[in-house]
Image 1 (tube, rainbow, N blue to C red):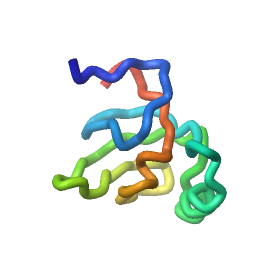
Image 2: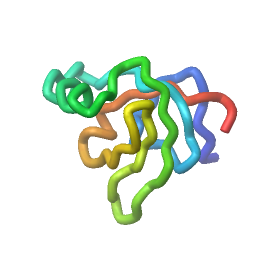
Image 3: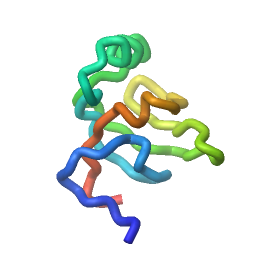
Image 4: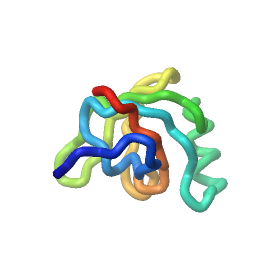
Length: 87
């Protein structure tokens, strides 16, 4: 039905514009991915909002406290998030 169930961690790649939640972890705890995110001021526990989903498997534009970030590829598949109940 296209609705995202709250309370279950999901890949950031599954979300749409307007979805909000909390970044929980990187699947497989990939140290390189965690270092990359950390260098951009993104860490587990950070709240976010998906601002835009680019077409043709393009990046997601995601707002964190550290700013707006274009994230795509394998990274958004590895990033696990908890989705807020209300949109």
